[in-house]
Image (tube, rainbow, N blue to C red; front, side):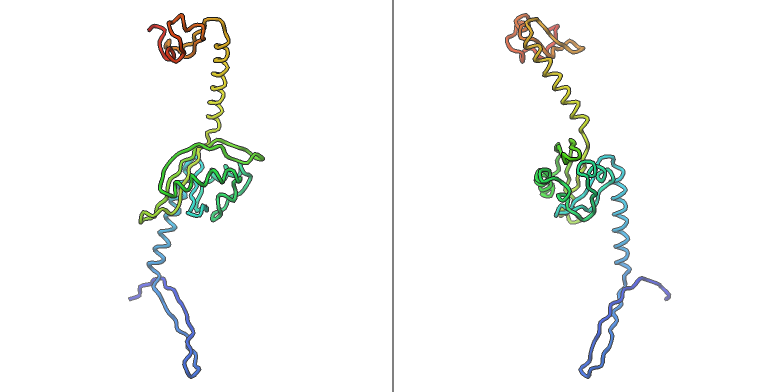
Length: 220
């Protein structure tokens, strides 16, 4: 009827008992195969666009811890902390330090066992850069519900951690000054709630222990 469709050919040599040789040609309609390939390409393109739209580093690993996909943010991040160019099909552990790989594997195994979770990690090569990351792990499943890999989103929280460390150091300094001071010192927030208090001030407020008064208002 004039319909055109893609076909695939396979040839096989056949020899008769009298020595005559024949070539057998097997022709197969590849329409469904090509449709499936087109669908896979479309899904891969959609996945790639999705992970590239995320500002944090995102990458996917198979059950052998090998890359199946990643976005540019992850490429840049791995270059910064390990000084290496990553490639699809290669193992994540090949790029990490031994210490980082040892720390990462149990978390990847948790995700491959079906768990979704978030944890913090301090990672990288001392020769390049070490950064704090908030890392979220998700198991990846096929249409049948079988876990075939793990997806990871890594958010750089180095700036936040440095701020937290600075605040902790500042609080520790204030506390050491309060504990060493013979004066009556009370520090409150803008609402009058007590944040810190020197030991010598506790009897004034009728308390023996700091824990009893912290968080209370001066008006109480």
